Image (tube, rainbow, N blue to C red; front, top):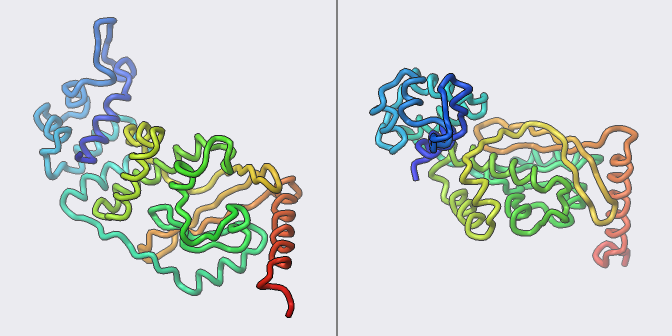
Length: 279
């Protein structure tokens, strides 16, 4: 399915006709705007817009995209996604590799009091510090947070705000698919999630996009209870597609105590493990 065409259709269906000055009555059966109404409001020909939604228009101009973004009321993230989908009809971006520089690995170890990890555009965790491993209860390399949330966790699992997390994951993967439409590993991941998770299928069909930056993340850890953390996402340079993610607790909060307790429990467990016992 053409991603640009799909995005246009979902956004058109969400516009309230009355909000843009189009009178409606009980006989109206169309959800959102009609194609003809969208074309009129954006100042493009009906044929031009129909070809866009059918995936037959190869090079929509910037003026057309600007007008459609205005009619649909797109936010900055959605607007950028729309432009990217249109550009990729002419130029396909190559998916970045997944090699983490040694300097970044050392940086993770310099953050001992907060879970910190490095994640790529597929939501694969490429590296994490000790506290991140304790938070998730597993080694960091090999963890994909999309699979973890949709296929391994439930509303009663590690993620206290599971439903919100699923929205964030799907929105991020939509953005990633727009940036790297020829990434076979990303396409395989999306297909796997769609095959197994009914909720993923429903959310994916909405074509929502979300940019990750910062915000609250709440975890229900089996050993230390609720951890309300603040997550900051730092985009790494060199077009790597990677982000450094750090989750901190407010000073003096119960969550700060919880992280400290978790670190202590992890230290006790490591001290008891056979490979760390003194000969």
